[in-house]
Length: 337
Ligand code: X2X
Image (tube, rainbow, N blue to C red; front, side):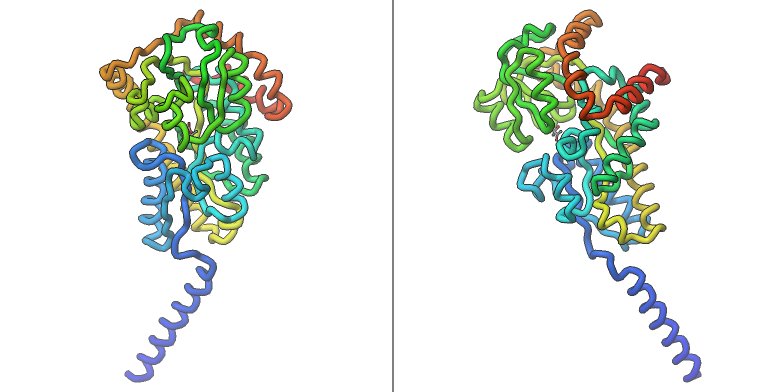
């Protein structure tokens, strides 16, 4: 009896030692950065990822979300560098915010590249999406899955916008990459780059006349309450979200846990994309109910905006990669509709 007990105790101790050694480098908690919190689809995507990982790892892998870009003092364009250097472990981030460090991510910001959801999917789920992920990986961060912030629509406090000349001299808050500066300059507007943290105060004081963001962001952040009475659904671009882990952290996970983290991100991303797309019509109705004037562009009106922003492609083609742009355009042309 005594012998048997000793043997069992010895086995248990060995098992404990073994598991301690194999998980020696795991942290008690991993930081996950987001710009938008849980009230927005973006924050919900991160919540879902954290929840699925905890559940599937039976509590071994714990992640904690830090929203409002607080890990980079509100400057969302610093998120990627912070992840690369290991200051942030993981993130669910927008392609726009990481594009200063990963030029290929500017692909999604090219005006009027993606006319509909099928076009977004054709890029992200195809070879162009793989090429973009390879570019992210090369710069120090492992991308795991796609999510979606959404089609970015234009709002302002001054007038109905249905042709490029309406933007003449309008002060527009833009985000992230200098590409936005070029798009809005091409349209005759006066763009100002600022973080999301600074955007609402700037709209409130009238320091800027307008902004562009997905309908879900306009709705949840109650952008109409700061005087943004006019909204144009021009669908000029959409920013996918990327679920990602710093390469340094990724390399510390066992292959099984890497697979678990990736699959959870894929599932969370798919869940969030479906959910946010299904909510758009309801959001639009509630925005209209609150008195916002919503303008839908006719195909001819949209063409005028496409023409007016063509110069952005010439300017950005070499930075993004002419081959990548061509690959994306082909994917869009051949998309399932
Ligand atoms: O800052 C924005 O406009 C936001 C919240 O949409 C992004 O982070 C890209």
